[in-house]
Structure formats: C-alpha cells, structure tokens
Image (cartoon, rainbow, N blue to C red):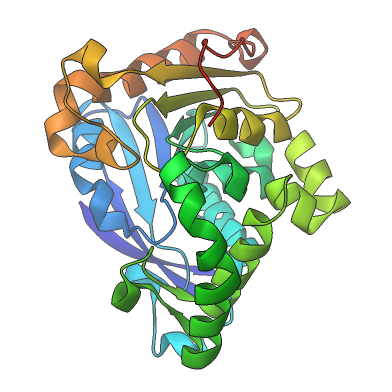
Length: 300
C-alpha cells in the first residue's frame, strides 16, 4: 500500500493506493460512508488488489487523514465531497486510461456518484448498504430516534462547536459543519439529495449511464430495502439491480450496515465484488441488469 496526496479544488486529499502484483484487471475507487475513515476499508482493499485490481481509497476533505488544521475552520459541504470523489476518479483513470474503472460505494459513497460532473469516466458502481437517507426510509429503530437528532441535536451541537462533534456524542463521527447541515437538509427531504438541491441535481443523477449493482443487507440497522429502491430511482437512466443479502442464508450471524468490509467476511462476501466487475468487463453497460421487483417484505 502506498500513501499519496491529491489536490482537489484547493483542498489536499489523502489517498491510499493498493497495487496488484501483476498487470491490473481494472481500477477501483472506494467511496467511503459518512464519518468512516479510509483505513476501515484497508483489509478489503488489500484483498481486492490481490485479485488483480488497482484500488484507490481516500478521505474526503476535512475528514480522516485529509483533515488539515482545525475542523472548525473547514469550509466544505457534500457537493465539495462529490468534487473530491471526482478528483480521485480522474486521478485513478489517468493512471490506467485503457482499463475499466469501477466504484465501490459504501452508503454515502453510493449516493455521491449521482453528482459527478464526468460520469463517463466510470464503468460501474457496486453499492454496499446504501439507500436514501430520508428519515422516513430509515430502519424502524433509527426512525424513532432521528427526529430529535435532526431537529435538536445536530443544529444545536453544530452551532455551539462550529462543527458536528460526533465522536463526543457517539453519533456518526466528527464532521465539518457544512457537511452535516447539508446532510440534514437531504435527510429531511422525501427526495433526498435531488429534492434538497433541485433541478440541477436531478439532471446530474439522470446523466448517469453506468451500471449499478446494489447489495442490500436484510439486517442493516440503518437502511431499508425501500430506502435503497428510492436512492437508485434517482439514477433514472442507469441500468441497475438490487440484491438482498440474508446473513442466515450464508451461515452468518450478522452483516449489518458495516459488516461487509470486515476481514471475517472475506470468504462469504468479498468474492461478489470480483463477480460483478468480471460481468461488467465481459458485457457492455447497456446489457447490465435491469431493475427488478423488491422481495415480499413489509416496508419499514
């Protein structure tokens, strides 16, 4: 693993690059979840490089290894984070211009690609545990807690501290004020990012043509199947498929929102990424899986 720095619109991003021993099959960029540092994905990224992929992870500006100075001084929102994502994609593509480039988006990392200004650089998105963050689409237990979170805790704590003190509150993690307040607006809007940001965002999501494969965990403590459907409905012109993962069917006790990337999930889950990428490499994007009906379940 090599550590690099990349400039993005005035910010400096911390990157980690995992290089395969032989010729790369493709380039992969990992877009992390809200409040999750890139180090969390190290075991998975190392394994994926061992399968022949050149993998790049990164921390968004003002977060993790990309934080420089005081978090109170960071002026960034989610649109800036989308620009960071795009800068990393462009950098990875420049290293392997003749190879496919795939995204692995964990939660937020599968939401932001709809805001890319150059989606043509991407050949496919594998979404892990992602969905709309609209609060009524949250998992039942979370849905009972979020009205207080969004209407009281977030605005008050962010105003008092100049950033969101998530580590102290044991909620999400420390985040720039602009990121947290914009995320609040998204999560209170039934159409999430598109509803909060307006027509320009809707056009941006509609411009995406790369295929999407979304893995939805049945025991996800944050996201529901309905939320996943609502998110990928925003990608109106992207061929997409959602697969429901049942832990018991794989002899697993639990997966949840974060479990896919744990090292002990290697044998049960990680091979799915290679299968998806191999399928996209062999078939043109237009032949990617279409949407299919949700399984029989009560919407949460």
